[in-house]
Length: 241
Image: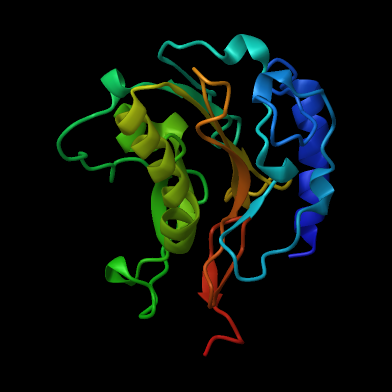
């Protein structure tokens, strides 16, 4: 996955120019509240290729929220789909009041960009390679069958990559009653329809990130399977045991 460095370099430019209002890069001073850290441009090219870990830390785990985003009130923003039907940045301030109860309804009617078949005996949950992955997890706000919030992602990416971080946010909010900023940025290379992964950022609001914060990249891969990210087509990897 050497090409991941190229697309992450491109995304750095897009983030700085196209999403300036959303991103404020900070120095990695883990003993300071997020809002007090000094602006910096993080060299996202330094992210390693996937090597067995479902996620890798960015910028020492320091998210890039602006001061004005630290509001102790619920809000949620979803990007419109682009010309290829791809999702963009999803951003929410999670609070306990808006977290759902009960069971999630089906989302089978949604076909995210790059949605394709693929079934392998060594994958759990029936062997299906791809999940309809929520950018903002259902357990955080109850948003569900919304095309602007669903991407094509592997089972491994969904369960081993994103879910543990969603669970951390949900657990913190339910335990403390505090708010958490949570932003998910899917990363595509060129015209590819399946993202190479997502950047997840979170910070607790009331204490400016002291209680909870992270900034990670989750790889949209499936061990043992090769994926054509242009189309979603997939096949058994040569080195699969």
